[in-house]
Each structure stands twice: as structure tokens, then as C-alpha cells.
Image 1 (cartoon, each protein chain N blue to C red):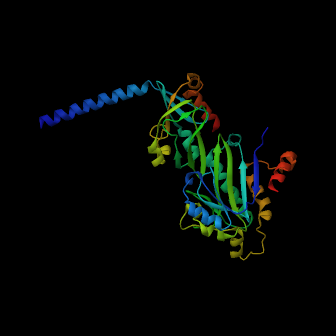
Image 2: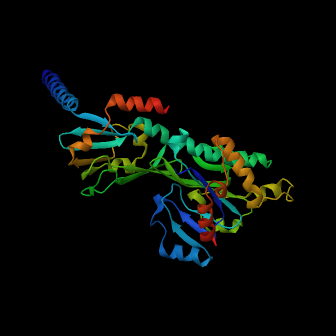
Image 3: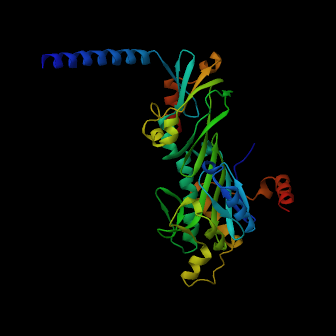
Length: 152
Length: 208
């Protein structure tokens, strides 16, 4: 009995330690935005990209998603994917030039993720970007918030 | 400066399919449809397979949505309401059904289909309103991929109402659709030959 209680608390401490690490890790990632309602989370030279909560709300229920091929080289503003909602396809553009290092297959299989969790589990693709100037030109959170308030 | 445009036309018989169905039809199935005297074209629009042809009024609004303060969902609602309003002006009760884009006159009968594409806020494709369309074309496919639902036309609905004498041809319905579009989107619609005679002439030559 005593042994079980001990191992439970040991596990809880390990879990807490992992959580603390991952929270700390995320704290140092930078989040940027585009005027076409994409979010970009920068971590060293990898950017994770998806559409914002504002965008998913304007689209409606997403029923079909295309994401880019891993390994593809993409140029700034190139069409790299598609989302479909209310019988409308909307093109997704890459805000950064570079190589696609990952694409979210879960979202292709379960399109509702984009509506339920657009800025976390509903991420679309990751780019190993090459051009810091493109990153610097992205909007910060305050500017993006202002943009969405003006649009409403 | 490029203005928004609204193109209204009739197609020669053609089945078109949406982006998510690229490559979905087998070569045999495509050949079967073509033997009926139809083209088969895969497009970049949303939605699934549908028919376009004589007797059907097809509308292609080419709009910059930002100027109209519209997102995709609201734009599509606008197209649907344009058709609902057009039907109302013809004395036909039609409605929108949540989860089933298009315009319906009953639980199972659709009088207009829609499918659009939005690139950087610019719209393409649009909607198709069955005026006097021959419904036989729709029986060869599962329209919009919806089992248990079917297409109907204004002419059929008017006949059921005992108003078969009402002109439901695309030419007769066209002014009503334009007026409804203006009312729903709160904008003016001017004939192309007034705004740009050169573009009008070019299009006229292409159509011939």
C-alpha cells in the first residue's frame, strides 16, 4: 500500500515537471499573424501555421482540408492548401518561404478540429523558413487584434 | 480600377465537380456521362457534382469581399438569400436549410445549387438556379452528393401551383434575380455595356 502511494506521488511529480517544462518551452515561442487571418508560431527556424479563430468563425463548419506535401519547397504567398466550408473553397497561402517540414494529417481526417481548436490542434503545416525579413513583416498580436476589430 | 462583376448565363450541357472530388469519378463513369451528350469538368469550387445546361440561370459574382465587409459564410448566405428573394418575387416559397447549402422548396427538393471559390477575398463560381432545366440530366447523378434529395425547377414548381402559364425562362427570371441581388447585397448593378463597352464587346465575341 505504502509503495503504491509513493509511486503515485512520484509519477505526479514527474508529470508536473514535464508540464512545467512544456509551459516554459511555449513561453519562448513567438506568435505572429497575417492580415489574411493566419497565425504563425515561430520556434527557432520552424514556423507552425494555421488559421485564426476569427477566420474559422467567418468560414463556418469546415468539411474538407488540403495541406501541403512534406518536403515541398514553397515561396512566400504561394497557395499551399485549401479549406472548404459552406460549399466554398478558400485558398490557404504560406506567409513564409521555405521547406514544409510537417503537415497536419489529423486535420485532414477530422476537419472539425479547425473549428474546435483553430490555434492549437487545428494547425495546418510547419515551414523551415529562410527569410527573417518575411517574419519581421508579420503582424504582432496587438496589430492583428486591431485589424479584426476594424473588420467587425 | 476593377469593379465587382456579376455574370449571368446559360451553359451547354456539362457536369461539373468540386475540388474535393478531383479524380473521384472513374474513366468509365466519365465516359458514361459524356455519352449522354455532356462535358465533364473538375473545378476548384466547393461542393460536389452538379449539372449546368439550357434552362438554368447560372450566376458568377466576381466580388472583392473586403469591400462588402463579408466573410465566406455571410457571402454564401447572401447568395442563398438572393435566390430565396427571387423565388418569393415569383410567388414561390423557398428556404435555406442549415447544413445543406443551396435553396430548397421542400425537405428533399433543391431549386438552386451553389459552389464558390474564394482567393484573397475574391470570389469565383457562384450559383445555378433551375428555371426550365430538363430534370433528366439530374437523374444521371447524385446531385451535390446528397442521397435521397433531388433537384427541381421553377417551371415544375409553378406547374404544381397551377401556374404553368407563368414564364419561368432564364430571360424572364433574370431581371428578378438581378433586383434580388441588389436588394440583398445593398449595391447597384449596372449593365456591362454601360460601364465598359470594350469588355462587353470582347465577351460578346467570345460567346459567339
